[in-house]
Length: 107
Image (cartoon, rainbow, N blue to C red):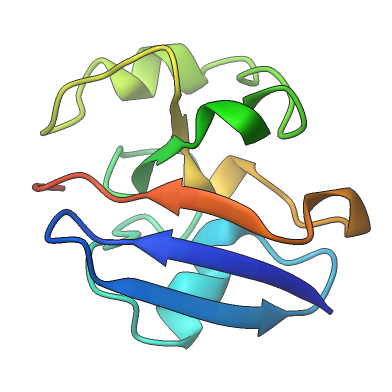
């Protein structure tokens, strides 16, 4: 299991133990984490799973995949260097303890 820590825009912290191979988005949706919409179901066709990877974790989640930058241009909240689409972050043992912050708005 991989622990993922979601921090909502209001500071609410949700910790979830998730199976390796799942995406940060799917885990959030399966556990009713508010702040992730995932409107396209993880097909990278929207930006409603936008999140901010904590700086200490940014190097471990990998680079943005092809097309992710384009989708982030449509994000409802500010895009930063730590912005990712949570559907594009697969969980591995190396990400145990991953912290992601959720934007104020997704739509």
